[in-house]
Length: 127
Picture 1 (tube, one colour):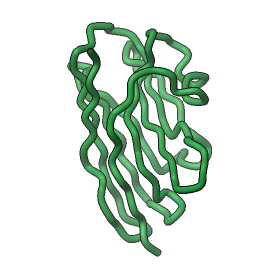
Picture 2 (tube, rainbow, N blue to C red):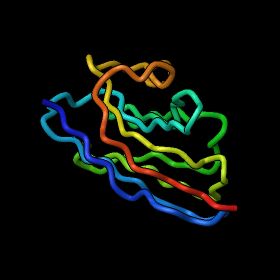
Picture 3 (cartoon, helix red, strand yellow):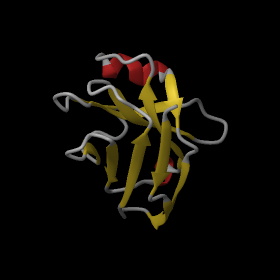
Picture 4 (tube, rainbow, N blue to C red):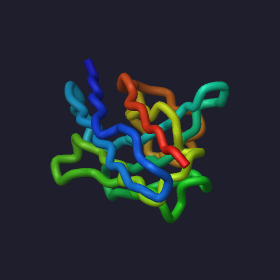
């Protein structure tokens, strides 16, 4: 059974940075989509950034392009999200996810997010 454990959330002032990490276990596929989604109160879930674990192709939502960077470690079982120049509108619960069944169209997957999910980590950005 796939398990995803997020870490690194917290509170920061606007303009600051945070780094989220997601450790995956119980997973054997070497090529798949992993990514970060977020949901703020009263808003729909948004695919923030995804990565294809074989080759590293990335996708970003327009709202975070140029500010967020998704990456994976060499073992490909940890995905990170470096968030710079944070804005109050980035405040949300951030969830790590992995596509199940495995897929390669990670930009499309970002719109639907079907798969296995972590418990989430809160990010709060104050003005």
